[in-house]
Image: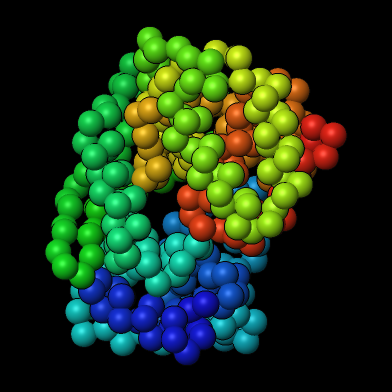
Length: 335
């Protein structure tokens, strides 16, 4: 929590490694799980900062419009604030996005000038685990190339800093909206990441690397029912064959931007891996339905794999709270 005594001071000390401007920031939606911090010193800068936040639904768009319209003093009476005093402050403004898993270990910052002509994303990682994530993203952004013909963009690494205190990856910010529906060029892009290796699930490197870790974690958390259901479904589909693929691993609405010039930017490659499985596209559909409806029916091996991957994702991030909420009942997953 940003505003709890211990983590608040750590969070502020992390920000002193950045060029975030001093001032008072709104913490939204709340101090317990802050999604973003918005500068409040100038009305114009405040509105620009809100414009850089991409909602994932029409409801979010309405909230965004309402927040922009309300006086800052009213917003300060509704949302908590955080005072930042930064001796390293630069001359640009910032939207601060703490990592929802641990606000003190990774911070993403959208830096922008007064006219929004120069906007960039800076990812700072401080813990061993988050440093590995950001370094992994850098490696994949360096390796993967944009596909101009299909209008698929993989962000370029603009700069990378690594020292004893942190690593920082810098890339461009892309204006546009999050993608709600998949297009044929997105399918084609991920098809090209498939290898020629095909394995049954019980011999697939993706499963072999992750299943023992998932089993151990679910035992630790006493999620016995969830573990039993996962095991039963795995045994049901273990002879189904899938290609080995370079995998984004977190392909979802919020990691895909449809730009104003009709390009599709795939961002956040922190969890990418080579010995993955070709389920990025169905995982996108799974995440979308889970957001909209809160459940997913497991009808086949692919349907099982997206649930398996979501469980792995929470295990890998250490999100015990989410894992303990997961349920599989009569082939229907819910969270």
